[in-house]
Image 1: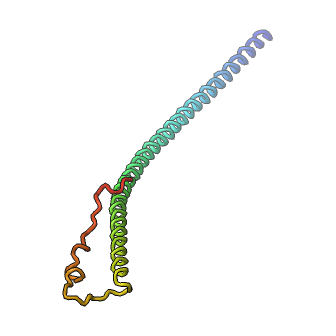
Image 2: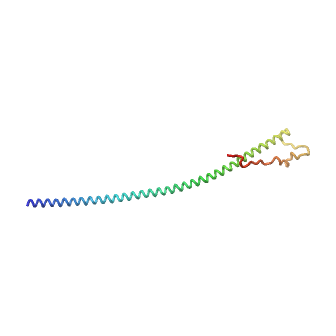
Image 3: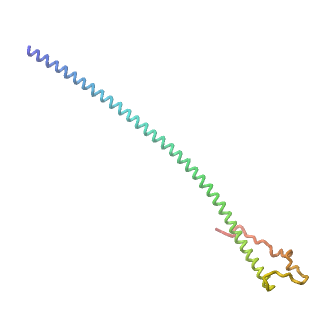
Length: 154
């Protein structure tokens, strides 16, 4: 009996041991499933983060393109205004040159007139022949001095 009892007790311990192994295997399988589910969730969150980052970058690219277009438009408008002001300045420089030359000519005429009479004031001649010095007859002195468009080349 002892031997049967020992065998019996040995087989019972084997059953308990195999029950423990099954329980252990079940626990290991449960942990494995939890880890797999956790990894799937982590991968899903990672994909969502990457997608959100990609969406943010696409939005940023669109915003930067819009800003670049606005800057380009502003630069083009500013360039047009600059060219317009530069053309106007060129015309004004030509007019300054023309008016300076005209002023020089008028000052030379005044010097000639003053030298001829020996005084700084204009005195009416006493003779009846006043056609030359008549202010209404000085049209030859008022000819405009015109500058051509290409007088100043920059």
